[in-house]
Image 1 (cartoon, rainbow over the protein chains, first blue to last red):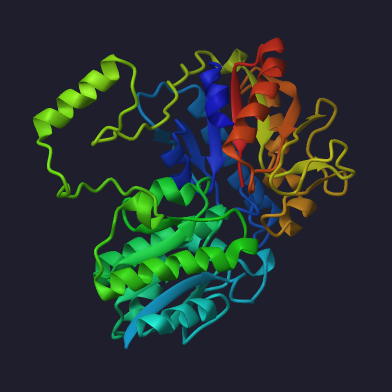
Image 2: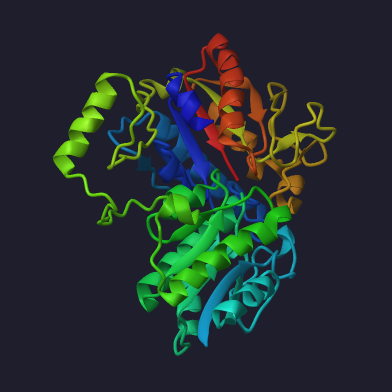
Length: 79
Length: 350
């Protein structure tokens, strides 16, 4: 889906856990998530920690949309 | 008697489904689940399954290095001639897990590796160069067929029989070039000219060196001014209103939906939930924002990090969904994004 959206001209960031799969299928902008069942907040941590992590990862995705890249890129996150 | 080590996930070992997908790697003596059938088939080759490794799919994908390391250490001192993983059918995480462990075992123990995956399993593209991946079936209903194919190739590899190439043996082309002696020799120059004539006159011909194509999409230009950009949210994690109004399927989805978030600050549990059948839904049902982060997107909006949020988020389910269906659904969604002058998209996949 991401590739079709990008083919239509939209910059798109894929937030996912299986980065090697995303790279192999040819996704250009990626931000790692922490797991499959809960990509953006581990229920084993406090609500505050989950929220902090989610903010950091989504912020990386927003910044990624505004970042010029020349090749497939995994954007770094603070946490 | 030759020895074979097998790898299966927690589901096929009978430990449990998604709630047990964090199961840590374990090496068992003998067989477990489908490796009993592999063992049965290997008897004719004077071989046996000496050990079966079991590991949860989520444990392997989330703690790959640790999982691989622990399995390799556990296998030290085990004498074996062949490694078999799966069959993984169209299960993406399982296929990738079979590939990861197969690649590591091949590198350390220098034994051939056989697995089996459906053509749409992402593990095929990632690992077909590293090992024999049999062209497998869609689901475990065809377990016997896929196991039989793996065992057949195992027999040939264990007995040292010469393989007849990927098409004849039923595995994905590995991109390895072999020297072949033609039964009726035709020298290369003649073959090339024959091919050229066939091509020029529109007749069928088969290249002797097929270059695989990778479907890359040109990189879309970055958003220049994030502070005025309009962003849309999407997910393949199956986040829907609790009554699932669009009846999106829990696996192998062909449907998608879009849901209005303009009047809310976050997705509340009990109002939204996940219908994805590929993972334990407890966390996302309690707090759907862990998959579709509407809460922090609204915060960033208020803080002026970006310009505006497209009023809908888009949902489908990624597990078992074919690339063809995914492509079609994306094409159906795109006009809504264009109509609303969306500048960029964040997709969360599970």
